[in-house]
Image (cartoon, rainbow, N blue to C red; front, side, top):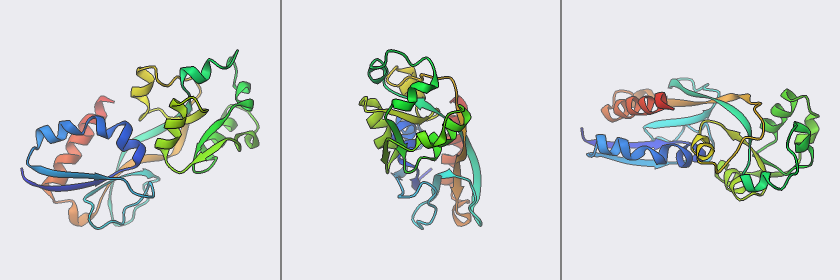
Length: 204
């Protein structure tokens, strides 16, 4: 198979999951010229040069072929070094004095605080970042505790770079979707990437 393929996906998904696996697609389809880009908005599907969009949102993309890839659970994640600064993280109350790391707004931490029975307004402090990679960089650098995506952080958790102080997770209202413009759906390279991507996700 020959051709070109342009894929757009969120920065966190790209750096923490896709970039560690994309060589498998290239090995299977060496004659496909592949490009990967990250959009400014996590649910962006407007770029006419993109063949496949991987989005993080609610999947409401009228006129597009939309397929659910992965639902997302969020849980507090931090580095072992950051955790070691606390004498005890035995209960969720320890977070009331912690530096919380946020992506964009306070919504994910607010949802988790609500589920944990903690005052929601207490989640409205800490550092807000515009990009999930920055959130994780701060967490890995022991600057605070992030509300982490369990899926894209799984390798960092397995390696011990990030740890879960609590077992409590909250299901996000947003999920990862694959979105294909209808005029691109018949492209053989699009079909090949779809099948490869779904096969990789089954293993995770």
